Length: 217
Ligand code: AMP
Image (cartoon, rainbow, N blue to C red):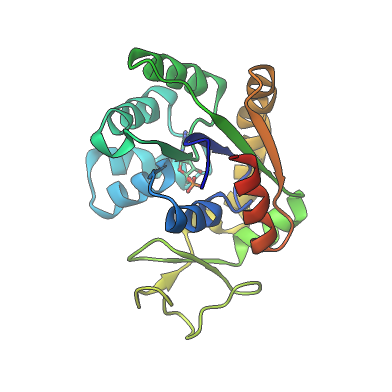
C-alpha cells in the first residue's frame, strides 16, 4: 500500500501527526514510535525518566537531546521496527536528527521520507487547547472539531478523557515558540537531503490522510 516505510512525521504540536499515524497504522503494519506517548507512559508509571521528563514537558520545553535519542535508539533496534517505523515527534532538533542518522547507519538503514504537517498557528492553538486525550489508549478527541460520542468517554476503549497539562493555553503558546526556534530548522535540514514532503494539515482529516498516503508512494 505504501512504498516508503521508514519515516519521520514533522510538524508543530496540534498539526495532527498523531491522528495521521493512527489512521496509517490501521492500514499498514509498522511500528509507531511517539516520544510524547513514551514520556506520558513513563510519567504515569512514576519512573525516574518520567519524573525527569515531566519537569520539561509541563514547562513546554524539550527533554534534552541525549535522553530522547537514547530512548529512541533502543526502540529502533528492536524487532518491532525491523519492517519500518513511524517516528512521531522525533527528531525535534537538528542534533536529534544527526543522532538518528548515526543510529540508523549502524544497521545500514536510512530514512525513506520526512512528512511535514503544516498548519497556521491560530488553528494549532485552537486545536491544542480544545484537545481531549484518552488516559487509557492515548486517542485524541476535540471539544470543537471531533467530540466523543459520550462526553468524557473514549469512543474506542471507554477510557476517561482528560486535557493534557501541556495543552493549557500558556504551555501551548510556549510549545509553538519552541517548535519555531528548535524544530523548524529541520525543514531545511531534510529538504537538503531531498526527503521532505509537505502536507496541508489545515484540511479535513480525510484529505490530510489522502495527501499523507500520496507522499508515501
Ligand atoms: P508530544 O506528545 O509529541 O507533543 O510531546 C509532548 C512533550 O514531550 C513535548 O512538548 C516535549 O516536552 C516532550 N518531547 C516529546 N518528544 C520529544 C523530543 N523528540 N525531544 C524533546 N522533547 C520531546
